[in-house]
Length: 154
Image 1 (cartoon, rainbow, N blue to C red):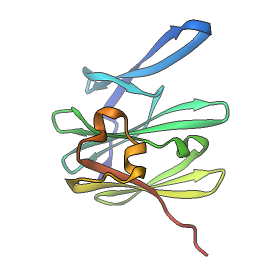
Image 2: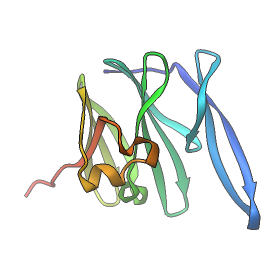
Image 3: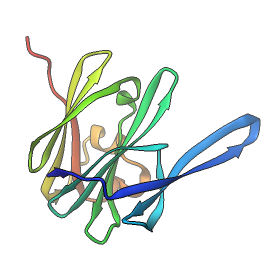
């Protein structure tokens, strides 16, 4: 896995009733629009990995930040997505590449560490945790990524 800067975006702001805004981004890869709309207002990090690309997008609220994790195949199609509401109250401090398939995400307030794993082959995982982290269109598909919190040292 390696960090890249091949992706950029166009921010989309849609106003709905009562001054509520929905902010999303249109993804651009090497100066061409490639796919539909992704959640978030910015690209937090991007990586080239075996079988495709990993993108982390974010939206910063006053009291926390939402993070979305997208896996795109080499044809630049979104094949898996994770959104974990628990991580919404955290702020990314740093992202480290552990090995070819694992990222370590360090968060501030509270001090927590999470691992994002890209599986060598897609897996079935119908655990409640895996289902709650995905939008409906990905619930009944094999998982390419897993996100889990590491236990703090005792």
